[in-house]
Image 1 (spheres, rainbow, N blue to C red):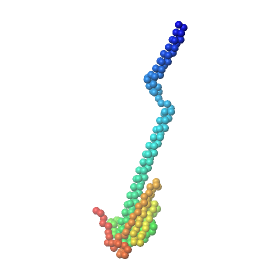
Image 2 (image 1 turned 90 degrees about the vertical axis):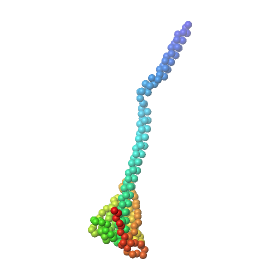
Image 3 (image 1 turned 90 degrees about the horizontal axis):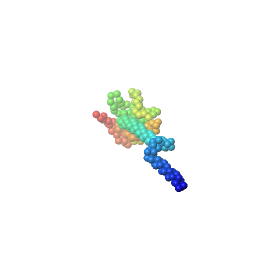
Image 4 (image 1 turned 120 degrees about the vertical axis):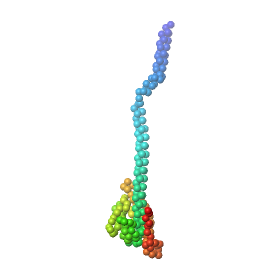
Length: 208
């Protein structure tokens, strides 16, 4: 009979432990624990991950913008250089004589007029590089006009058969550059044994 109190104490302790175990495993208590928020370590990890993702996204955006800007600048330089070469070729093609040429300039006398207020017949014209500006200089009346900007190099080469080679390089301070070249033959030279021409009979028809 004396062992009964100890048995009761054992059963009481066992019941108390089971009750505490059920309390720990209670889903409601787990939800309350989750509702308390994030730990400092979890917040720091999330901030680090978001920072890495943001840095990668910004890098790709900046790179895409840089490529787009470079493409636009390259296209602008190309269009400007192409137009300048076309204008020079049209004028040189109408020349009846080349009166002078250097490594960076060419001077000639054109044959026909181009229209009211423009070039006149038998006018002396020079294409030359002045600083970073490609200029067209007319002798009479004396008029200088720019036909291209941002020019870093302009090269003129005259071959033995009077073929004129023009090389034009345009560049920007941001690093973009483009180089174009073309060859042109004057069409209105006098009779020549080494060059086929139209003997002052060639004239460019203006499109309507």
